[in-house]
Length: 259
Image (cartoon, rainbow, N blue to C red):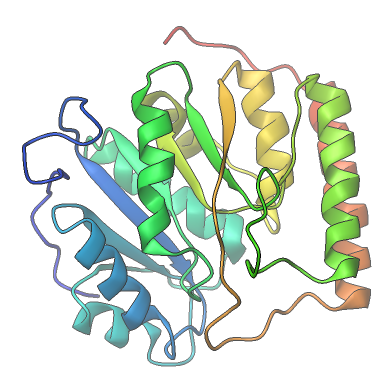
């Protein structure tokens, strides 16, 4: 496990970010066998947000992910077994909740989420009227920007319609893991977070908790090194599983807590 760095604050060099008060910021990256890309991603985040703490949650990797992340200057949280994306993210939220971070930005360790786009999430979060900001590939689409393949877009469209129907809110990118959460969302996600393929289900969970969610347009990149584990059979399995999980969530009663 890497050496725990001192907790830090982020700023634009003037003691504030986006004109708002300075907060303790954690940038977390769930990572499973991402040794080829994680160091570069950590370095990019540290260059863009030099005063943020970067946390890599090593989800039982069998390669040098932990060593590469620590070498690049990240705090490394080693999980004893592979928990999957949802379990790794919850571990990150628990870390943030226990250490008093005010905001968490979640990025992929495979390079899909450019560090230079993080400020868009933070600026929206700093407005103070939302608890969770999701970076969307589909609110705007600049020429040449990366977009998923046709089959994946069909799945994204299905979840967007399903979640929009449930929440009565427009959702354009329900599978995006590029997100920023404030303290209120951090505490609730530390208590419970969906497993396996959590992005769509977590939006319904946030809605049921009364968390305020917004999307902002961002650019994303293709994976730098690793290959997605989601093929057609696996994708169909997850589509059924996540849809059932979302519908089951509708039958649950979550006690809403005051802000």
